[in-house]
Image 1 (tube, each protein chain N blue to C red):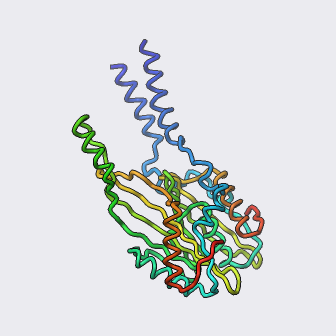
Image 2: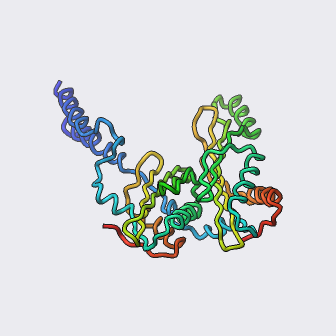
Image 3: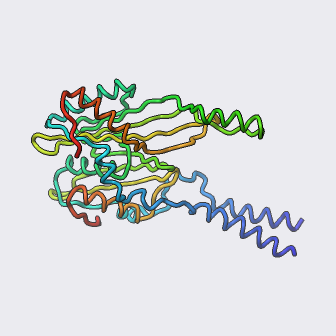
Length: 137
Length: 178
């Protein structure tokens, strides 16, 4: 009886910590922190050139592009290599001299929240665009 | 005796789900440029003596249609075509193995039945007189249990050579290696 009570107590406590709609909004991480990890600024005005460099970088990383939109400034692509990695990259102008590139990725069925893969992506993009990037406030 | 059991049960029910929640590993090469990236780029890219990206896209689309691909997306302003096709993926060797294992061991081993092949093709003006076309292939394969058995990029040089040979005929232009 005592065992049953204890087990019920443990299960109740545990179920209390499980979110009811896990993964739908993924809002556990700070938005500001996530944007910083996923964004870089480039000193250019040329959105088309930047988007074309993003596409070339994704191809260099063995992604197949799913869709792209010059007007909106977005590219989505998927990499299949025993796993599935999907990435959306958006490009927007800030002020007169800077373009902000933001990338967000999912690995199989999980969001990529670790800064390291994004750093690697931006290093590859810098090579393709022949510009060095800077962090975004 | 009861206390350690309860303790273990508590640890197992709280720590294990927490661990499984964060235990996923992204391969380091997923978003890092690999040394073979340059040779892959050469394999997947050809240079043509034209600055007309639109002409390259039109000719590429015709070749893709010749090869049975359906167009999924396009953005001509960025020189992009995305296409795919579903095809049979049955393999005689796999089916033979399935029959042998089924008869002698009594186990049902899954075999591949269908695959989805996807491509994206990107044109890029390199100079006032030259443009490049780069195509990348990938595929997902499903077995007879409805499970995904393989997801991979296709890097067989023959595939790319054949595609570019057809494209160059369609364009009446010679395809140069980059």
